Amino acid sequence: MMPPLGILFPKDLNEALNALALNQENVHIIAGGTDVIPGLNQESNRFKNTRLLIDINKMPEVKGINVGTEKISIGAAETFSDILQNEVVQKKLPLLWKSAGTIGSVQIRNRATLAGNFVNNAPCADSVPVLLVYNATVEIESLSSKREIFLNDFLSAPYKTKLNKDEIVTRINIPIPSKKFTGDFYKLGRRRAVAISRITLAMLISLNDNMIDEIRIASGAVTPIGTRFFDLEKFAKGKKIEDQFLKELSKMLGEQIIQVTGLRWSSEYKLPVVQQMFYQLLKGIERGSL
Ligand SMILES: Cc1cc2nc3c(=O)[nH]c(=O)nc-3n(C[C@H](O)[C@H](O)[C@H](O)COP(=O)(O)OP(=O)(O)OC[C@H]3O[C@@H](n4cnc5c(N)ncnc54)[C@H](O)[C@@H]3O)c2cc1C
Image (cartoon, rainbow, N blue to C red; front, side, top):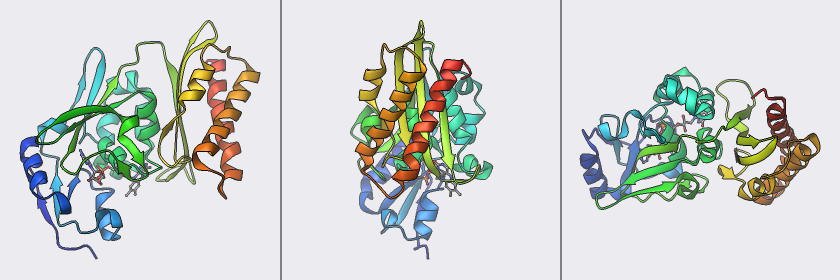
């Protein structure tokens, strides 16, 4: 049963940070609550001893999707439905837009926030591989400091991040890809809707005369946390898009995933699936259908 809880609705960031500074040991931020509330109900260890929730939804600092010339800045309390309704995100960050549409159901997307998804850092958090290939950064504030770090550095282990107890994520900044990138996000679950991901892949690629000018690859669910494959990306740079190479690259991705996760009972099934998924994404590029 859920323990008795207090809840605060700070009107701005300063008020929230002051409350957080006073109550660090037994307080949790709540945004959409789609992870926090089930976690409290199930008496999950992650929310053990929580006595106070700080609801960030009334704070202007964590709201809005601001479009600049070089980046799109998404407030931490923007929901997946907000993202889906934003035409600039749809046009400039199509992989994020696509992944937002795969989260839960309409009811979940109306509550669930982008920041809540990666701060929770479940292995199956669907926005993570996509944000990783977009080189997203996370803006974080406490009463005494303000910092901005790459999401790739922010995520440390399943359900763990580098967020300190006195800090709040305020915004997610995504550089607008400057080159002619194309790409895709693929999610495999046990069913088509309201499904926890078993495997996710995100890929961005820019070509120059049928050669790979730049490729960015990230996985989720099949790895303990969302993971970028920087070595593979370096290896692929400058290579020609031809079937033999695409097969080799897909095989190498599978091998690198095994290096990250170790052999598991599910590897026999997941490895060929992930290799085939990635191969199909690459073939889409070759056919020009992405
Ligand atoms: C039925 C159901 C289906 C789901 N389907 C999917 C799915 O398909 N794909 C998927 O990826 N997830 C899914 N989820 C999980 C969940 O909806 C997402 O992870 C969601 O994005 C969490 O966002 P939230 O705003 O609800 O987070 P909350 O529950 O409010 O918070 C999650 C965590 O982040 C912290 N937090 C939130 N915002 C901040 C901030 N600004 N600063 C610091 N800390 C913060 C909280 O303290 C908490 O630890 C599902 C959940 C349910 C219940």
